[in-house]
Amino acid sequence: MNGQYQRISENSAVYQPGRRGLVSRALDCFVEKGYFTTSFKELAHHLQLSEEETKATFASKDVILSEYLTHCDDEILTQIKQAAHPDGDALDHIRDTCLVTLSFLGRHEKLPAIWMEFYQYRVARVVLKQFFNQLRARITTQISAGMNSGSIRTADSTQLADSILVLFEGTLILSLLEASTNQIEQRFLASWEIMIEGLQQTSIE
Image 1 (tube, rainbow, N blue to C red):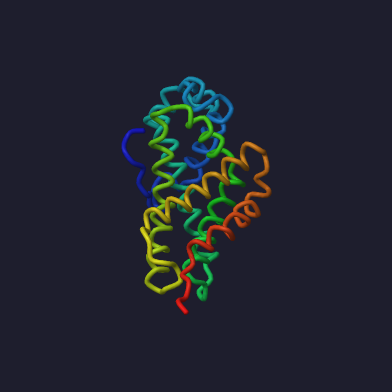
Image 2 (image 1 turned 60 degrees about the horizontal axis):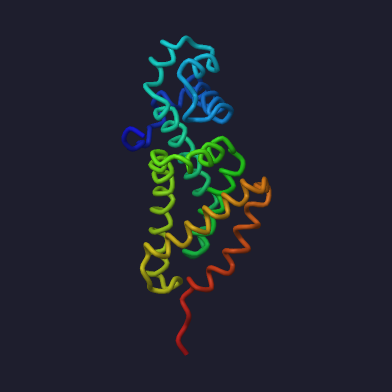
């Protein structure tokens, strides 16, 4: 993917209904035909635009996916803030961050469907890394806050974050493969209860 996707302000073109509609329809085309095998001619036909208009609107397929990822992340972040419990500890915040993100992806199957294709292509790992880096950064911040407050045991925050990401991604992939995204939250919570036993700070008698 050409460069890293950047957060786009709410005043930018991606938030205009017309462009967002095109991005959404383009994702439909990728899901149907495959991200890597979709040509700009096929994409233009799906968007009901000329090939020239399509290329003038989107410089590449990467641009389309980048804008979609940015929009998804903005929505996820908003929902995380809405789900936050002021009196919750760091482990509660980490759990809620994972649940909100999993729930969002479970309802918006376009992106995970494309991810399943991406795992077969080396170049596409960049796209996956960008999205998971956002989640890793949030979890790492929450882990550090938990260590400072004493609710999470002192350890390597990067390793702890990676362990949580493995649980997150494994839950997502299994749910997609088994077509059980309606149970994605229950699957995560069952494993989370086991994981937090190793994360919680134990008092010294």
